[in-house]
Image (cartoon, rainbow, N blue to C red; front, side, top):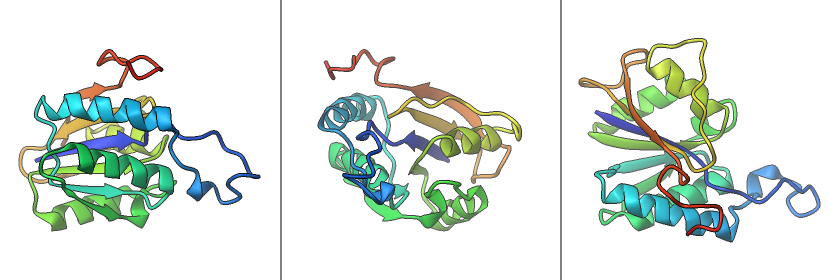
Length: 167
């Protein structure tokens, strides 16, 4: 089983005048463009989630929709409250098992994605740094189990050669 863990792409800066509810804060246009290029390149390298779980916050939902829109299979996007800030790993593991899919993606927030990824590969006290828009692949022999994953790769737009201007 392949699990892809994604930190949402580049969002607008917090501004209580524009977004009194931070959950409504969207991605920037530059962030959307840069992330589309990143996913386009990953799609050509085998990145192919069959379903995408996302935090219901706007910036994650928009990130998940970019993933779905860039992949030929156009996987479904499902909102999961367990991916809201202070994510619930046990709930996401259970949800993922219920999907009975070979490739699943989660889109969430830092530091939650950092902590969940570390726990999935057996480090209960660590964190793995996720830049905005970072994508990690954690593989499991059969089904997802906390502590039994193997981190195969972690990429950012920068490691794929896209600078801040999205070039």
